[in-house]
Each structure stands twice: as structure tokens, then as C-alpha cells.
Length: 445
Image 1 (cartoon, rainbow, N blue to C red):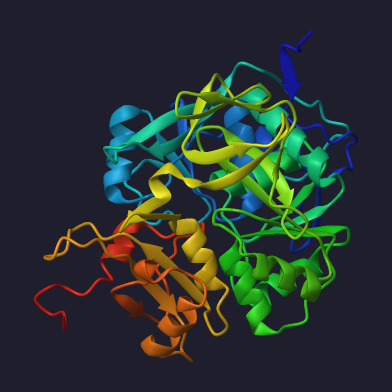
Image 2 (cartoon, one colour):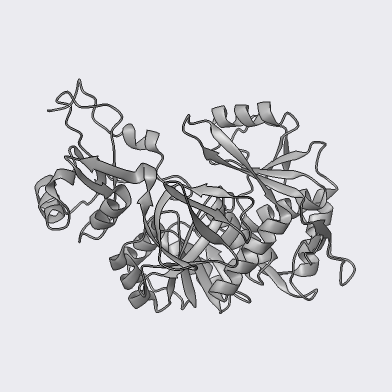
């Protein structure tokens, strides 16, 4: 029989560590007191935009919203246009921030200083499993964000499935991804509420900051990161504190980078696969297998020309926008996104695979393939690529690519840049990539 409620957190004792701050551990009692205090200060309105940069502040803000019956909005971007759209959909929306409102055009509340902790063994609130606690957003074919509702029971199941798969209970988690992004939300925030882990409050970006954060938390510890942050950390050559595991998501991870990370950092590396609509669906040990192992009770089933996800924490039956190959009931191979597949001169491949080949080249620090919006004058489709590779010339890089990919997929143009326009989640917005393309009236060809 399914439970009608789930506790706000499953940390078992008043002194259990829910999070880590620079001044030390945050106990369950401290967390519950902060949640209660903030919940009493929240302004009227049923929807909250939590942009707290401190991960613990975000965690408290999420908890305060949940216990007070409010819904947290987790948009993929905070552009003025996105905020205007959110406000039109939820007129009672207000913003919780911790000193960095970023000119958000919404009524705001600054995260308050903590009150002295009084009392002991504070009661843990019970939350209805069918309570909608978050809205997450994906972009449809029109580019207009689509809203997906997340209920408390499904999110708890989600976190517990990941914690069990990774053996994360009792671990301190240092995350380089923001808590507002679905990956960071699941793998640093939810797993700290249900799963027995404890998130580091900061979000380190540079290699030196990552090492400081890891050193600030006790073992067992883990790094929740992206291929971009991982490569940058390894290239820096800094001494990194021992870790028990590494978790990667948001972009394909090359076999070369996975093997290098495990060899250098001395920890197993796991990848998470999922999407905003479903949440995380599967994981794999990247150096051991190409097959993905479904989490918990999640299932993939054929449907029409594709597949759908259901069961476990997946709410309903959700189409998967990726090309997958089921190998048995619990495992599958991932061949790329439907929108990611390209066909040039009768030959097919995926942008994800091309990106892996580019990233695996010696001397390439970062890089990405993409399709242009406009059809060329000669009507011959050509891929574009942007790359950070200061030791290469266009000729040397193209020659290296020829050893890995079919010549029809060689990029034209190949654009060298100092950095790629990655957002806070390490993803590359298409509009930012298109802005790097040379204008026709200035192009040399």
C-alpha cells in the first residue's frame, strides 16, 4: 500500500547532517528550524522563484515553499522575456534571493539570517505525496517553454532511486551545477532531503575552487559535475582531495575523458541519463559499459517509432526524444537525440557522437558541433563547429578530425574561440552558438 505522505527529509536523527557550510555541518534540527522560520516570512503568493546561489539557502527555500503549500518554479533561463512569461502565467509569483536578485522584475524577499536554535528533536513535517511542489520547464517545437508539474511523492522516489544506485547515503556532495537545474536539483538537493547525502552549500566553478570545496567536507565525498567542469579540472593539474565517486551529466562524456578522470582522480565515474520531462532515468559506469541501467522501477517501452518512459518516479507515460535500443528489460543503449541526428550526403550520425570525437582530440579544451539555421547558397548542408584549441590551427584540427569522422561531417566553418558560451548548467544555448557564426557580409568565403 502506498503512503499518503512522505516526510520533508528522511535524515533519521536531530544531529544528522543535511548540508555543509563553510562554518561546518548543518544538522536536521538546524535545517527544520530554518525552514520553519523562512516559511513564516514568505509573502502572500502561491508560486516562488528561488534563485538563491547558496545551495543550502536554496534547500531551505524549497523546504519552506513545500511546508507552506507553495510551488517552486525552476525555469531553464532567467531572461526578462522568460520572467515576463512566468509572471503572466503565475501573477502571484515572487522571488527568493540571497543578495543576488539579478534585477529580476518580481517582488522579492532576501534570505533571512538564521535565528538561534532552540529546542531539540524538532518534528519533521509530513507532506502529501500528491502535492505539486515544483514546476520545471522544457522548450517545445515552437520554442515556448512547456510546464511539467512535479509531485512530492515522485520526487522522493526519484531521490531514493538515485541514492540507492550510487550508494550515496552518508556522502558529502560538492556540486558544480546550480540547484535550479534539473540535474543539480535531483543530484544535490533532493538527494540531500531523501537519500542521506549532504550537499556542500557552494557552487565552485574553477578548479582551485573545486579542490577547496572538496577539502572542506569530510569523506566519504563525491563530485557532482559536468564533462566541461571535469575536463577543466583535469587540465589544471591541481591536486584534488580523494573522492569516493564522480557523477556527470548534462552533456555526452567521451570514453577518453571518463578513463582519464578515473585514472587521475582515483574514483569511479558514473553518468546520469534523463530529461526534464521525466527526471533522471538511468545511470552507467562509463568506463565499464555502454549500456544504461534504468533506475528503480522506471521502464522504457516501444511506442510507435520511438519509446516511452513510465513507472517509478515518472509521472504518467512520457515520450523519450532520444533514439534508444533496448537490450533487455532493465538496460538500453543510447544512440542520440532524434533532433540530434544529422543526414548529410546520405550518411547519418549524431551531433553527440561528433562532439565526443572532437572533445577526444589532444589539444582540444572544449568544442561543439551544430547545424546552422540558414541553408547555404549552394544548398549543400554543412555542419558548423566552435572549438577552444589554442595549440591547433584550422588545418591541424581538421586533419585530426579526419582520422575519426567521415569527411562529409567536417565542419565548415570551424570557428576558434577563447571560450564557449556555456550557461550555468554547462549547456550551450543554440542562440549563443549562432551568434558566433560569421555574418555573410563579413565572411571570407
